Image (cartoon, rainbow, N blue to C red; front, side):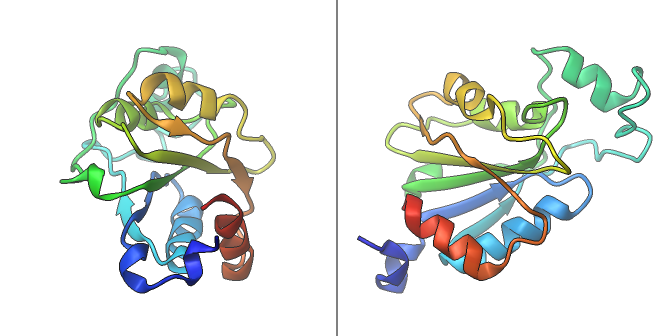
Length: 168
């Protein structure tokens, strides 16, 4: 069944949630939401990352310190009111240190995912999605997590719709 060709009221069962540090993941998430007829939610940290925070060459930068500590859980500024209204949630992020950023771990631990399929997607200059799906499965209480996919920052709406149709 191709649910993206079903009636619009079914489309509201899909959410694209994303964290974007540079804007690349945001662009892909917006295009994916449009292609899938999905709602869109930006995962915004309470403390916005500065360019210094994102300097992965500096082992003392905020992102380096967070990624070095597997228990780090950066706070998120807002929450999805009713996650249970969604049957499928795409979760997008840039790859940091060969995995999902710690703020995605915060996001996954913030909800009861019973009955919800989570589909990770990442953007990266070259790294794949790695163990992000497995990590997210361990953190997302009750979730059914799909292995996910790395997407190009230039992925077209047609390419994203074809991918979503394969999954949904």
